[in-house]
Amino acid sequence: MISIIIPTYNRAHLITQSIESVKNQTFSSWELIIVDDGSTDNTQEVVKLYLADKRIKYIQKENTGAAHSRNVGVEKASYDWVTFLDSDDKVKLDWLKVFANMILSNPKSVLYSVGVTIKYNDKTSHHTPSNDEYIKGGHITRFNAGAYLLKKLIFIEIGGFDSDLRSIQHTDLGIRILEYLNTNFLSSTYSTQSLVIIYKHSGERIQNDWRAVQMGTLKIIDKYKNSVLPKKTISSYYNVASYASFKLGDKKKSIELLKNSIRYNPLNIKLYLKFIYFLFKSISA
Image 1 (cartoon, rainbow, N blue to C red):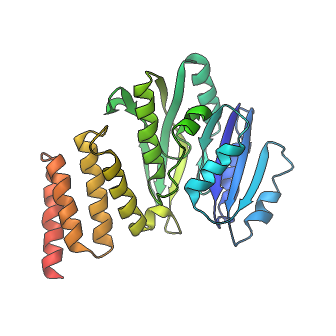
Image 2 (image 1 turned 90 degrees about the vertical axis):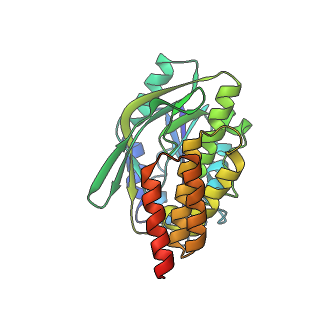
């Protein structure tokens, strides 16, 4: 039995496709918990149309952010396994069936992951887990919503989502999950099938909030750079924070952060080219 949590805020025009993709699953032993984070549109009216299906629950709360909403959803979850889905994304028909089959085939694992397909305008890219090391002993997992299934007890034990983070909340949770697995010698299993479809659009989405991206990425670096993260991963986060700073118009900060990115991955030529570009933009501003 699998609990699916969808946090939502003013996505009445998008959430239908997410709910329908869950209802159409070839695996039927699930519950869907929709946590409305204080929507001011007609989300309630849209969701009410689905509540005849007793597997679907609807929770309304004040606006406290997606991370806290997911934590609330897990608190209300009835089953041992939890996964998450964003209200503007959807999943393929066999999404839960693949998770269920992995549980049956590898019952000792406590984390299961699948690939994602990211769509942006007319571009499509596929990202799958692999055996490359991310944190010692753990494979690279796409910690996007919908891309992983976790034991509810572990989610609770590691403290759930960090409600202070406005961005990269899944990344933060993923790092703590893998730390927990490594410390307790627990295993994970993955499938290379891309079963989650993520839509990147120009509408309201946290990835477009550059201040949130900047602050969230820097907090991740501060929390983990002296512990579990490989140097290339730290470099990647500094690179993201640098780009967010550039988009915010803080050219000086973007250059300083990019210097740190280069320091942690000095063989990455693309970082030097970006540094020259940012420096040129700073001088010509």
